[in-house]
Length: 280
Ligand code: C2E
Ligand code: CA
Ligand code: CA
Ligand code: CA
Image (tube, rainbow, N blue to C red; front, side):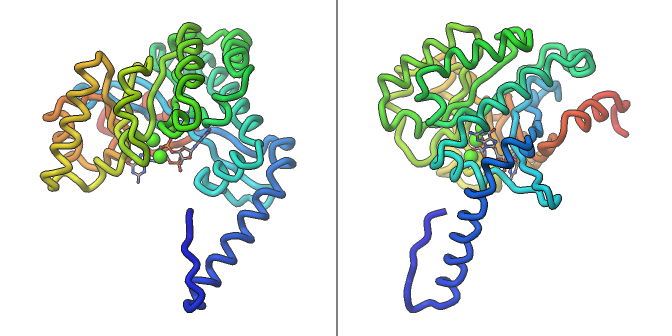
């Protein structure tokens, strides 16, 4: 995270220095971690808020170091993006997601569920990224319609035209395109009409604990209407309470992701939950 270093504040300074040291350690450890295949994927369901049916799973990366510590993507994805290691990590994520969702036990429990993979701006800008996705699909046998690629608005900042062209090519292969973290940081309303996307992910900062905020209600309502008017499916992140779920349903947003339904977890946990009789 961006820090303002205020020289007068010793404590603040100290935590900033420690944070930089940690970032440096992570940077140095990443190449070997990738070689040892220490990063692994967990999955979080996207649920139909009306029926409770699981529609999809988002793949989220974790890193378990040799010492057993689990590092959150918040602590290493940005660093990997800067150093270029995100290319290897991103390929690992894509391959793991495709293979996991072709496993017979996963297909038996969730035959139609999609799996989405986060794609960093740097990956999207790689000239061979379309080929990488094609190969991951071919090698796993996953039907392309069961894959989704999550792209953030920030990807559009550098070169919107290349970005739109790339997404058009990816979509032509068959995967769905999700626009991630919608509403944060960059104004993409002008791009939205030009972007070939299927699902708009409303960022959790508009959802979690925000149901009593009247101006927030107007914003989320406008996002949902905008998406629907363009034939794009709205999906809300950060749904933690039944109240938030009901609020979203009233606004016309049916696809929900969040702790109310399930936390990100190894696929085995979701398989066990799916096999358990309802209510136990
Ligand atoms: P994201 O793509 O926006 O992922 C959603 C984040 O929200 C996840 O954090 C998830 O655990 C968290 N979350 C989901 N539901 C709730 C909820 O109800 N309440 C709260 N408080 N949080 C919730 P996570 O797993 O720590 O990932 C953080 C970010 O790291 C992701 O944000 C994504 O930007 C990045 N990331 C994770 N895995 C990958 C990856 O494989 N590749 C790339 N490029 N980025 C990744
Ligand atoms: Ca995401
Ligand atoms: Ca998101
Ligand atoms: Ca996010």
